[in-house]
Image (cartoon, rainbow, N blue to C red; front, side, top):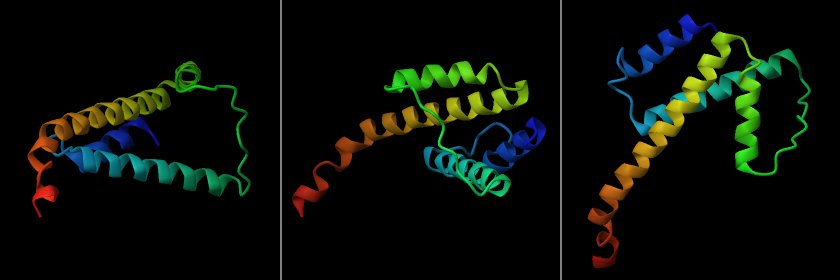
Length: 112
């Protein structure tokens, strides 16, 4: 996918300034992109080849990811880094919402 198409899809999904983005629809959008990438890979090859993974911790996985991104074409790298940033940001927002809202609902189940 080209960056211009990616930008159009983001704007169609969330609005021109991401004004309609929520943790839920961001997760759905990212899941849809991942499914499309998987489907495209399967169309190119019926066999799935498991990559050799040397990383043993999340930290090592992320270090490898960031080093691999540096070897990608610029447009592809921008889209990968943008989607990662969107995912992490909205996961943090969802966590913040849950910290604020959890106390409001904590006693609801207990009172029934």
